[in-house]
Image 1 (cartoon, rainbow, N blue to C red):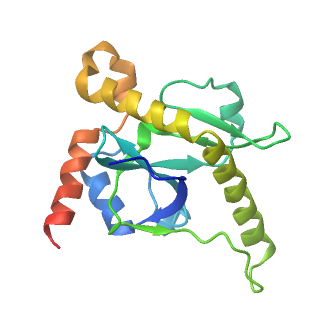
Image 2: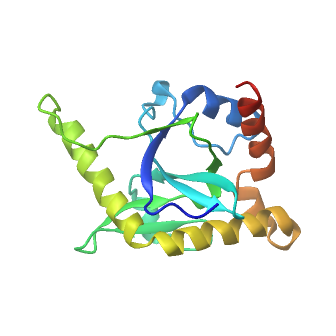
Length: 178
């Protein structure tokens, strides 16, 4: 499977995320109870030529300024050099079209100021991701291989990352229900 032309932004099915979290508590929540039901994911990133993954975004937080980019974490900046978010590769999840919905970033006439601000922030994040698509795909593949093929070589990294193989089994169960 070839990498899609451009990365896009998706929302992931809440029940699917819950099933993933039941096998790995490092999966990022999309629960409305903690106001994360609109947590965006960037994807689709093709791993090992056939697996589809999405990577969760996080809004910039003070702690991120001190953190360095590494194989499981990347800061995103706008054209003015302002940090607009981060990508948490360690929390990427396997997906299929049945569990994702494209997120519309088009501003509607009934959107309030908060929603407009949110959509603008996510547009900035998507722009950054599309400009850096090749490095995102390469980093995701590198991390996946490190965690699935030689987890003993980077124990602290392995502890921070989702168990990709366990999560893929959850997706397989979802697909088998079709």
